[in-house]
Image 1: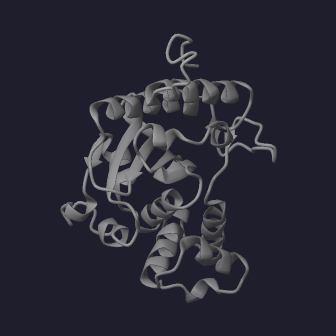
Image 2: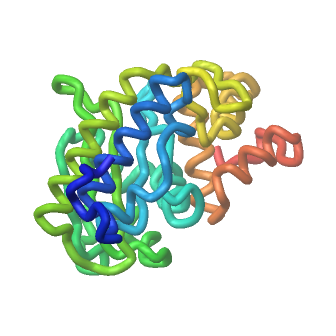
Image 3: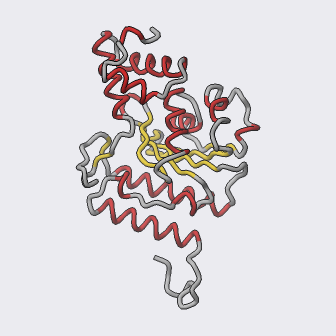
Length: 251
């Protein structure tokens, strides 16, 4: 919590840096009390850093990126994460697999060769700037924190410092969880909900139906969704509900 002598009795609002300290304290208490990470993280972190959206993804088994949390929970964050997941391209993927911080203050002016699939699609969203950093454990990235702005521009020095404060804190909280463990309906439990459970189910179904590895099945799903400008989750539902036979995919 902010210290009593900072604005106490004056009606002054806490500074953004005070607010981040309070946010981190509340998130830590919630995780220690048994909340899953996705339900433990309070809203409002993006605004404290001068961003419009924050997303946390984990690197799961097999190398896929799993969205764990977005602030705000709906809208631009999940839209951009789904876009990168479908295309297999974008800043979150680069930060994860090159294990380095990346900042693109103006997506419209970015080199088209940097993210050849992501950039043409991203121009149709509200995102205009991005920052992404790996959550590093030794030499390996176990997750990525990605922030977006709806106007071009870089973070200030203080905002960048706080972005890394948040990244380090989320690494410690992520290490307290177990990806894929069950989470009870009240949000208790140490596991993490998977935003794309339907896609994973469809991948397994397609793998079994066609007798191909799961990695190949996921590539087929992505390719078909991209070629037909179809949402990956909608495609998964069509397969699982048998509205679309597996052998009608673009093989």
